[in-house]
Length: 373
Image (cartoon, rainbow, N blue to C red; front, side):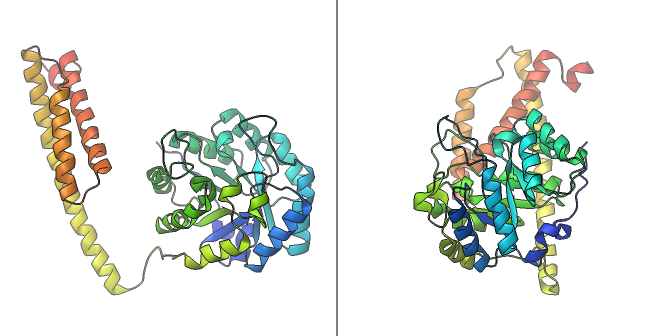
């Protein structure tokens, strides 16, 4: 059974009072704090856009040694100046107990846990223990691999430590596949987490998902279309000189252009016409879903009969040649109906795997039918 998280709604976070409940909630700033001049110039540009939450990486987890790993604790003084002089809230990434204590000393308003740290329960627990008896909001990025339980586990550890101002950031998942983006979106995992915990504040990090500025607009729009609450976008006063992730950072002016093109959709409408039409369409979906379940049940019943027949005649379960032929026909038929090949393949492969499992249970005597004989 899913454990319920004890979450304080986003609108009750003092951090976001400056947003006036206007979606999307925005967090912006450079990938890394590089100098006091860079931090202040970038922050002034964002302040002029009405953005009130400033981010910058102080400690940077890098794959290879001897690369720029952040300026460390001294950079928190620059962040503190942004807070004191511009009235902006400040946030940064943490990966250890020491990071938490340093952030507290310099008045950091919010922290986030990076993808690599989320994947390590020991580090998450260390951070959770350091956050006990604090009121600081924490955002948790998805782990590097597409493991929703690992993501949820990190949230549970923090929540059990008393962190109630808790949210997530979807930044995509690492992949060896050749795709346009830096990280694979796998939106279905974000949708699943959103479905399980609708009360959980949900941000998207299009910068790390896209890896290049030309993809940020489409990723940002997709995340808003899915109902996510806000965006964390890397912004630098001069990205060409950035010491990390230069290709994915925007200037404040480029960020302004991106935001002006975003369409923010409402989660619901009070229009009687809309409610009546959406009710009728959803009723049709419900009928079709019932039909799908009935057909799947009938198909599985035939698979059981086939399994019994194969067992009687001592025939192997897998018939790969036949399955490849059926799948190819299904994909072709699906495309003629406007269904993407990837979708048809995923659905039919799931059905096939379940059918194989049913037949294997019959062969090994683990099925309910065999148990009753």
